[in-house]
Amino acid sequence: MTDKTLHAPLIIDVAGTELNAADRRRLADPLVGGVIHFARNWNDRAQMTALNAEIKAIRPDMLVCVDHEGGRVQRFRTDGFTRLPPMRTLGELWMRDPLRATQAAVACGRVLGGELRACGVDFSFAPVLDLDYGESSVIGDRSFHRDPRVVALLARSLMHGLLQAGMANCGKHFPGHGFVKADSHVAIPVDRRSLKAILADDARPYEWLQGTLAAVMPAHVIYPKVDARPAGFSAKWLQQVLRGKLGFDGAVFSDDLSMEAARRIDGQVLSYTDAALAALDAGCDLALLCNQSVGEGAALDALLDGMAAARHGGRWRPDPASERRRRGLLPRGPAFDWAGLQASSDYLQAVGLLP
Image (tube, rainbow, N blue to C red; front, side, top):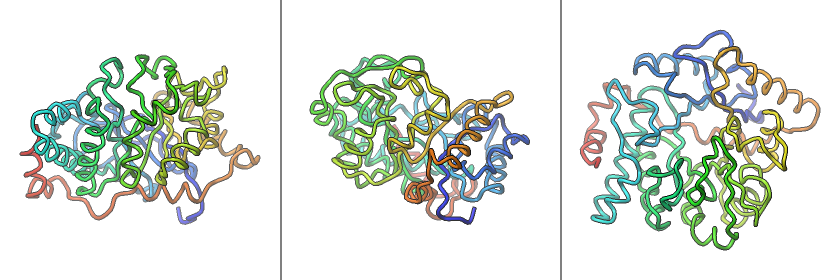
């Protein structure tokens, strides 16, 4: 893609461990700016490396993503990949030895980013900045700590490790998902606290890290004292609070539009196209639709057709600033291949520092 002003806002998935004809057609669509991998896309390192090389052959600027945090959210776990600890482990270590915890967080980022990049993955949706209230089943041990100060310091350290590997970062789930019990994959969580209370606690890591965060993913949570819409579809949250009050200038992703909470807006269940348009209109730069390529992929094709129609009909206009933010997430500097990574003293030292 040579037109630097074109905005490619859609992040989609592919069906299996190699591309089929439908995958290639969708990835060549100029509205697709990224692909997100899942465990079903993984056999081993050689296969993943070949898959990503084929994706980049179609679109060199494609952002190849994965949810790879450590603990129970780690898509690649075999063929030499390091089993990374859940982030709560780092928070527990902090309570005993803050310096050791800081070093371990940097090491986690370095190992996470280095191993993914060695297989051609550009970007991971990490770290989680949600606070650990001990109530949320979907967040749980994915959180560093209950104290936003500890969360911010450990997240900054992990992001430093990612940067050492040439990888950007993504803080999630703004302004905070840890307080609510419901799982937004299957329900619509509601957090009835005031804006003042949320900004004083859950959102503080975003305030403190706004100059370090490369990207943010908002929560599919409704905060009715602020807006009737979930945060990812709320201009109040994304434009007034995140960009205005907190000064964030990086990329904003929607969370997965296939989730239960994602398309129920203002009392209505929207189509994938209308949900993507609502997210982009609210202030997201990129919209994710996950796990829809399996089978015939009708939902993905409907989204691509719907977004093209929305562009031609004037319902949506490409945003060059959003495209610059997307491209800004692509890796910096060359990556080691796996053999080079295993020979790297910095990587080996980081592995030795893991808790």
